Image 1 (cartoon, rainbow, N blue to C red):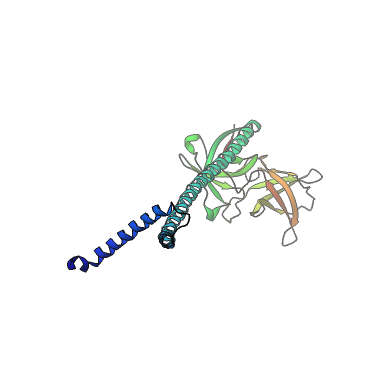
Image 2 (image 1 turned 45 degrees about the horizontal axis):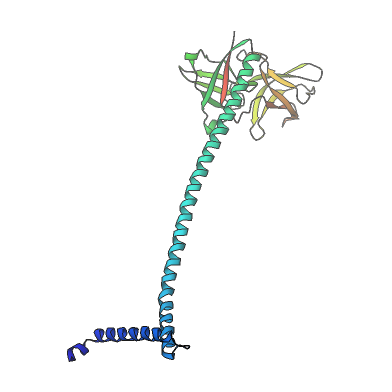
Length: 281
């Protein structure tokens, strides 16, 4: 017996069992009574307090777990939506590029119908160096397609340049906007208000406004806005009569001795994707 009582844990357990049994017995007995004994009330309150103490951290843990799961699910859903948005942006960008290329191809088809004196070979621009953006582009057609050096290159509705080097499958095109010292300047012309022809050459390019500048114009005759500008054929490289663009303004040059004519080119020089190489029949 002394050994039994020396084991504290066992004694406490037995006492708890006796108390529990006593509470159950009192609960059963109290059902027949109109009032609940004080001891029963104290026991019930104690059990309620223990339940709340135990339940509080458990509820906190459960709520925290649910909140973490919600955050994780929201993050995963957000990542999935970001992926879908990226896919949609890629598709939209591709559609815009294809739409632009389709429009340019339609213009080239229309150009073929109007330029009946030329054989046109349609090509795609495959390279344009940022360092020489307004100077040279490379196209995916060459001598294998019948392209030769010095042939004119058109896009949109008018001239954009000439072939300066033709390889078997590719060619380099010098743009009309090239104003470098090494460029073979394009000779162009426009008519004044009286119908007289005024000749000049492309001396520079206003990249900000996408405008070609016709310089070395010594004539003081006035040129109307929207007057058509074409190649003059002078120099014997580019044939005469190819459409270049329309006049948007005229100004005196820095010396005050000559006039500069600003021309809106027929093609957007900043966005050239599809071109046609023109050869006289």
